[in-house]
Image (tube, rainbow, N blue to C red; front, side, top):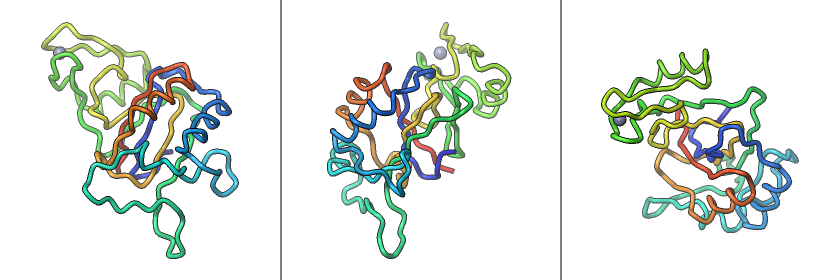
Length: 186
Ligand SMILES: [Zn+2]
C-alpha cells in the first residue's frame, strides 16, 4: 500500500478521515502540493515551498522534486485512503515498540501485528511501570503508525527529513486531529 522509502504523515486520531477538498485546498495554499500527477486526484507534484515544509537534515541533500528525462525516482505526494480502516502500518525498518512512559521495550513488533489482526483495540501493559494503552499509544520511534488516512511523501529515507511545525499545524487545522509521522522502509 505504501511505497518503499517514504515519510508518512497521518492523523493521531486513528479514525479520522479528512475532508479531501478542505485538506488539498489547504496543502495547495501552503505550496506543499502542486498539481495532480498523472491526472489522478490522489498523487501530486510537490509545491514550491516543499523544501521549507519537509526539512532535510543532511548537509547537502540531493532531492529530485520533479520527473526527469532519465526517469529517476523523485519526491511526490500521495493521499492514501485504505478501504479497511484503521490500518497498522509497519515495515522491515520498524523497531520493537517502547513504553511511552519509561521507555522499556514492551513486546516485539511481530506479536503486536498478530494480536492487532485479531483485536484492533487490544491493550498493552508495561511490565516495569503502570502504563497501559493501545497499539497506537506505544512509542514506535517514528517507525510505525496507525490511521485511517495517510499522506505519503515518497523517496525519503528514514530520518533523512522531518515535517516542519508549520506543516503539522496546517494539517491539524484542516482536519479534526493532531498529526504524527513515521518512516516506511522495506
Ligand atoms: Zn513503562
